[in-house]
Image 1 (tube, one colour):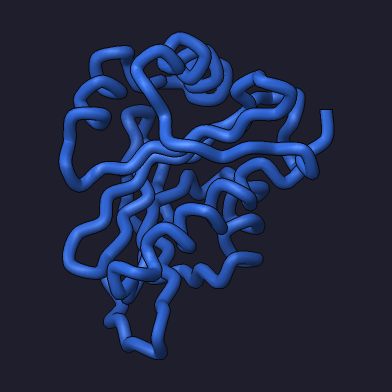
Image 2: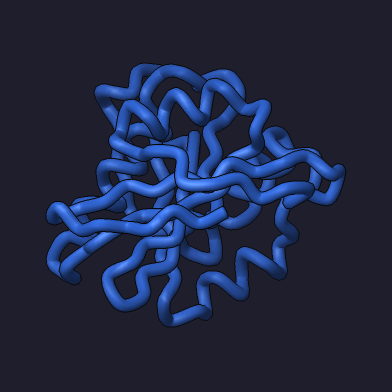
Amino acid sequence: MTVENHIIRPISESDLDAVLQIEQDCYPHPWSFQQFLQELENPVASLLICLIEDKIVGYICYWLIAGEMQILNVATAPQLRRKGVAAQLLEQAFKRCVPADLLSAWLEVRATNQAAITLYQRHGFKQSGIRKGYYRDGEDAILMVKVFNNQQVQEIA
């Protein structure tokens, strides 16, 4: 499988079993099937999947409200990590939000997830703060922001 031959499209309910499997492979406290269903029904949420050879290999879930994108969840199947799947999903999400006058994108990432932090930095995200004890296991989250259209964003602690 190569990322060059990928398709990115909106998720449908029939995709959720495959998405849930990736979620469970990637996170110590994965989202439930019901949480994904809630996001599908949320009018401000967008969920995209990446397919390679008709197999779901990654997804992104984000909200867009008043020019701000909040990235809630990004995951790539373990066998395809560091192959560009998450990068393609991020880029497609940004493209889909540009007509909505996207001003900024925000996300939280585990302080120990250096691979994800590096990915986000490559896509223009900068650290904006730290959320102490943010995750269930007590790990801190790094708050990151990407600013579009030369907007200024104040640091949040």
